[in-house]
Image 1 (tube, rainbow, N blue to C red):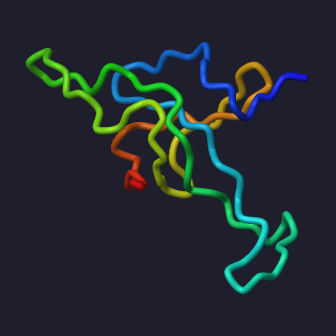
Image 2 (spheres, rainbow, N blue to C red):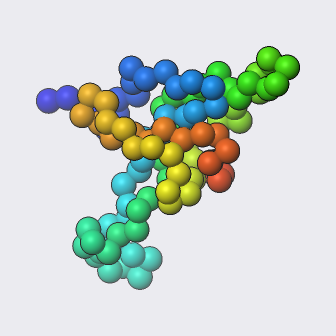
Length: 105
């Protein structure tokens, strides 16, 4: 049986400043220890970077390299990006400026 949760090679190459993110599952237990049903879980705003584009192109033709790299865990807005499905896996493609923070540690 193939474990798709550990799959990191995706046949998607994002363009410019776009980033492919595997969205992490929402918490099943609240901070108070209460088991949350699917309908009560918030839409996650956290994910793992799977692929990164070459960066935003400036007016002079030069590129600005993205601040995130493959493997980083990032936080993004609730309605950021576009949801896509590739090989049965769900991903989100977002622009670098939609990333709110990189989780460190």
